[in-house]
Image 1 (tube, rainbow, N blue to C red):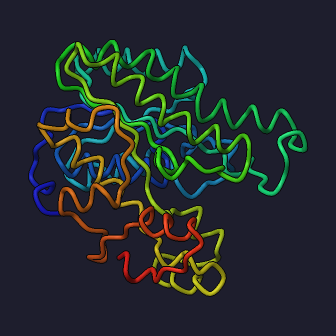
Image 2: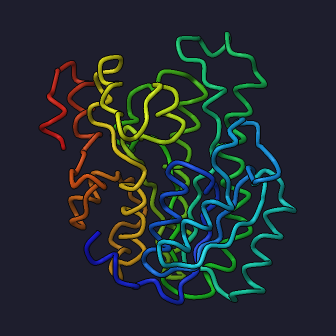
Length: 307
């Protein structure tokens, strides 16, 4: 982990919206490892399951992992499509901490809605609009209530988590609603970079590569220990990375006093790993979007050359 193991974020407060599992959980843990107090929000708790339908990951467990990493984790159940609930979360942070230094919009949970291989008009409208609610409306509601607290102090950081970079997403992302869902956070970060300038804030979008999330591992019927067995079914899985890589990417940004140079940019975990010198948990440094840029160009690169 390098310099991020130091407690550079002592006294800092982060809200990771959508911290139940995957990238959000890893980001919360990495911020905690750097010393931050992290509010981990989401819909899945030990008492209640969200529409995603997974019971194996909860926000309480995420908060405990933040504590174990050396930070202070606080689990707060919240549906980020409900303005009253989001307003209550930010009011609680204000009441308990009086500040917010990092906002991470990682809300999603729409994988069960994706139907690739269908035209826009072939997809049930309610499913498509739900994807946009989860990926766009929820982020807007969260920023609306959280940013007034974040801009009280100069230097705040907003991270919009998405899938793909501005460059990689110039091509069609395989499905009408999914394309909109994953391009919107890139544009939101760009727009917020302008709104935050006067407050000395920074807004970026960050994407992991081919993410070995809990849900993805289950989809392939493998575990983190034997994940390479899935490469036979999906050869591109050879470039996959753990959620820790994007977690370390966001923590590196949060620890960087010169992060304003990234303002408005679309960034990837692999790109930031090279920039800041960290690795994935196995010591490799996957550059998934560098790899996929060649795949999209019709080439057949060796994933080993991008690790």
